[in-house]
Image (tube, rainbow, N blue to C red; front, side, top):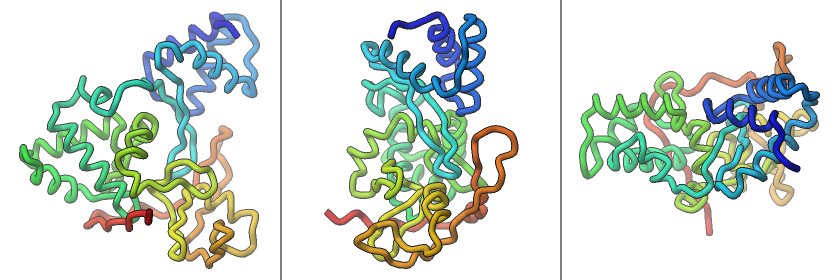
Length: 265
């Protein structure tokens, strides 16, 4: 299908913002269609995006969707499919900054719960070959958080939505021994729940969907079926929009991180 004026307007707005929630995407879609006197049907949003991606493909660009590991809400980003992790970061960060971030990624991915403390990251900065001062490391951590490469809550850091969108190939390629796909949605799970018997993993929101339809909480792996020992969050009524949020326990307090066991090969 050829691009219409509504596609072009949608893309122009998207390019000015790059990362948008599902609600924001739906609003831009509706306004783009209305501005071009076209009907806006929310069921046509994904085909609408597919048309844009078809025309972006020769430019090695893509409107890509991911989901929050915390509550399953969808978000979208305009992603360059060619650039490696260095190219994606080189414009705004020094080579030593990138080295720090890559080591921070490994620390987060290797942690049992997908979180590391600010102290872990400060220590990491001081251990680099080109050592960073604590003040510089703190400034860098804040910048990485602002740019959505990292996510921070109460002094605890995890990978941000931008990292999950743009660095998935790097994560699978370079940290394959730690990367596990969710047993339900088959997407990377870094923050989630782990079966102590088979080491299979679930996003918290996937656990909600899976166990809400079952009276017994056992591992989804049919070759395992071990009792599922984790608290399963609940889904409260959505406040306004169609998006749903999980009611989950508060993030852990800042403290030393624990390493996740590497995958058996």
